[in-house]
Image (tube, rainbow, N blue to C red; front, side, top):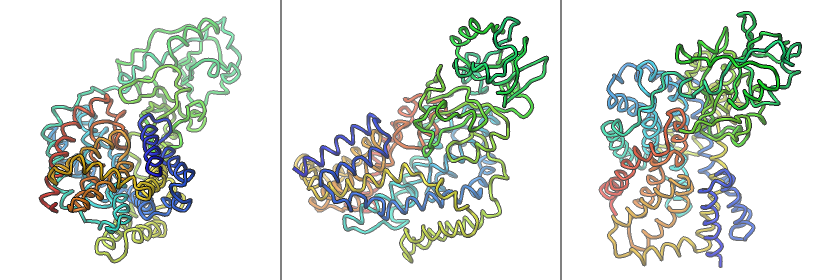
Length: 593
């Protein structure tokens, strides 16, 4: 019965992960609660994920990554890309990957992509090439680079924690670096030579054209018979009554921009508004507004058409740890909160049309935002959003860069030479980041991706329940009865393939929790090297290249690159297959079976 109950919880959890009934972290927390309610784990075991060394280490590494980011250490390499990337796609990808990949071995790859996204976009504009030629390789390079060391990804750290629970001890910082470097070189070679032929080429010269803004932004003039005359914009309540935003008011060639709520409207005023065609017709019929001819944005850049004075327009990405996820622009009162207006939303290749204010926001959504320049300074400093343009130098604490770098190197060396456990060195590094001023105390909470922390904390009890109930052993015995006659390489390959597929539909961390104990049990029973199987599962959990949803960095580049879902499959499937057959061979060659 414990086995049946445990596997039932697993199946229901899988269904929830796949269908996205709930966010992944809430699903994981629900799994832990279900296990406690069913008596499959004790309350202490059910919450042990929050005190697990892997969870705390991952949290500390997020903060250390923030210290590196805030001091501008990574941004120093921007000039290297500009200098050496050249004009050929293969050379551009190789130079970019050679830089971001190794960095991802020591700094969280989500932070790397967040920093390099605006750099790559700006560089693409200078070179007059489509960002879609570089952003998937950017994501894939950071995933491959994260395999070089233990601290490259949260998945590696979690696998190390599971290894300790199973009695094999934690991994050292450079335990599988030899394998990781070989895999990275193979992957980067593929990305440089093969991927350019498979990557889409989405022309993205004008932001306005990319978003089809002439269907959203229009100008209307207030006629002498309009009921709006003599009222302030706020009194008219047209922004509430209709799905529109007034971006500017033009009066006798003079432009008024936000804030506009207290502006009294006169006959002849021209309102620059964001709205759907249907709403425009309703407004005209009920309020005496006349729609002017369509603004021809193709004639000059959108910024010159819409912006005046201190106004600007930019793309803003919803980050994975954003509290905005699941809420709507209307609920957020986005315009009031950020003093900026969302003109359009892009979700991958989908252009979200119509009722923008009522669409629940998702991780990876790209917002086209217009507002005063000062508003974008505020947006650049929030942990909820990423403005896809380089941050101003003043925002970065460059004077602390050497200190932050020294702290991070110290953390790595202390753990690498087994002077102290990685947990202790990482927490020490966190305190030093604050004491030295590399980070402000309040910034450490925003640096942590709490969705990942809750995901880990919720899944760790599942691993305990699988072992306690006998479900792990039962699954291992059945797998052995089916394929026990195969050679060690083919069994290793089987676990790599299964874990890779689970990663694409669940998450990398969930795949490790489920598959690593089973793989170790099978290896023990067959007398094979358990470390080989642990490395296979760990690397397979990061073998997430075929969809934009399997790995967080893929989701981050999905919308900015203007990709379609199957662009990832076209480029990532050959890479995944290459990894499936190469990694088990390398493991067999380096570590033996």
